[in-house]
Length: 180
View 1: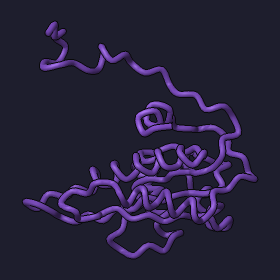
View 2 (view 1 turned 90 degrees about the horizontal axis):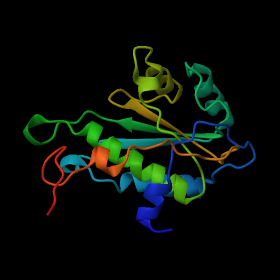
View 3 (view 1 turned 45 degrees about the vertical axis):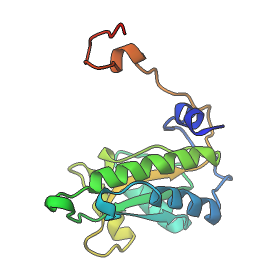
């Protein structure tokens, strides 16, 4: 499958995972390297990763997830950020980790696994991200901004219905048909 086909084929998976199909450390390394290859504002490289494959740590993370997410995931990839100012004192952390996450989701799909981008559910007012940071014993300055469960899907993976091209994209002017 080429890159464009993989982009069009990849979907978030919120179902159950098979318990006996774990990604290997080498596969997890490939996924994290894909995240590291993402563009980074002013090359500040504000995004870091922790692959959690220790069953005890996985269970501790699952225990703090509220609402319960990915309860059957065998592995988690934790996406971390550092708020480092760059050009004109602007921080590009959100852009950096967003690009990294998309690269990782594509790599996960390419390796035959499934995942889902969980951000708001862990960074909302409940601050589950802080509990995960505590479990991982992260030093100050690092924030957990995303949790990616990784595993083989137990159920069929189906994508959501997307709006049509004509509803979301135009040439030259928003909402105006270009007849050229």
